[in-house]
Image (cartoon, rainbow, N blue to C red; front, top):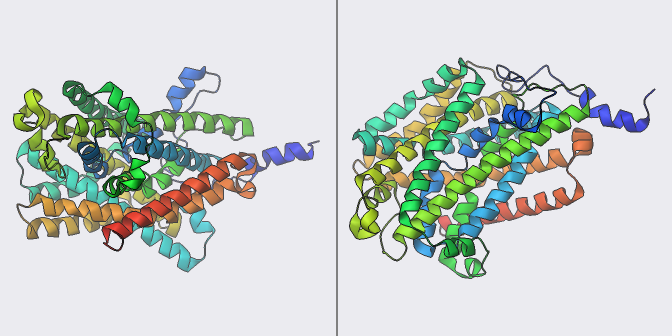
Amino acid sequence: MKTNNEHNKTSVVQSIDTSNKSLDEINGSIHVPTDAGFWRTLLAYTGPGILIAVGYMDPGNWVTSISGGAQFKYRLLSVILISSLIAMMLQAMSAKLGIVTGKDLAQMTGERTNKPVRIGLWVVAELAIMATDVAEIIGSGIALELIFKIPLIMGIMITALDVLLLLLLMKMGFRKIEAIVATLVAVIVLVFAYEVILSQPSMGGILKGYVPSTSIVTNNSMLYLSLGIVGATVMPHDLYLGSSISQTREIDRSSNRNIAKAIKFTTLDSSIQLTVAFIVNSLLLILGAALFYGTNSSVGRFVDLFKALSDSQIVGAIASPMLSMLFAIALLASGQSSTITGTLSGQIVMEGFVRLRVPLWIQRLITRLLSVTPVLIFAIYYHGNEGKIEKLLTFSQVFLSIALPFAIIPLVIFTSSKKIMGEFANKMWLRIISWFATIVLIGLNIYLLLQTLGIVK
């Protein structure tokens, strides 16, 4: 006979509804050994975190980080560090929600709101995914132009066809998708690590840069760039994605001990991969500081960066066409890896909010065409002026700032509820930190939005 304490501990397991699985075709598709050691178990859980980390190093973050280094040297490294720690906390909560409830964030939100609110939240989430697509489209299109001399308009049209990429990969198994994304991420890390080593940055300056400074708040220009870094760090689609792909591992739900084990290793995977994203963003800022600080060079665009890396008058003796080409290759790798995560997020959001199951290729084609259209219009209208086209990146980041509260607030509410999460609900200290971080993130994003619109100077 079970005691009340035992009954409470197993209540989470008993309440799981597996009739409507998130990403049903890959849900629980990867076997995890039950009696393996720590490292073998961690290896089995490693993968979803890589897809999550991609969102934190997409083309939308690149120019902001490099510009931060070019203008303020290493002083904004502390902003990247704090942003990354907040992201790790939120992604851990997202993964925990999926593992404990057996539902993703979109499903949970859709089930607990009335129809008008559910439709409204769905529209915001879909627009957020399209805004993320805009950064990937522009980044990939410009990379194709820089590497292969393909006209930008043609490059943008080619990105519309990469919807077929994930459809092919899905047939190969989710583990293959994780491996391909990991390879693309490795390319990004190696390229920027190599370029940073060549630039010979100041190690003392780097370490000092990770210590927060009051000048970040008192200097308006520095504050604006800091808000841009923070605002672009936590992506709404990553919270939906994390709550779903955390369920790709086969979990024995016969006891809460097994669920706790899954949470532990999924969180480890997520945190390790987000540490990689933190390193990439740090490398971007360090590269900007080491090569462009004090040169008065314009590095606000991808094309500027590409040209500057081969200009000896700007970056000195290390300048070479190879550095520029490596930068463009990393940009293409970032854009293509973002394509995969955007596709999965689109499916999660559509199925979760409106319970609409349509063939993946139709769903992705519609979403991608809606994203490509404004970029293509800009590219045709401003033909030959990449600077104008890249301004769409700013608008996309602004919209992501607007969409963020609609994902982050439900996440904190759900994971803090003992009724939903049982013994896995956020502890009091985590609730305080998560709500504080949420309020700060929302406040900073609103301030960034007002600054961008010129309402606040």
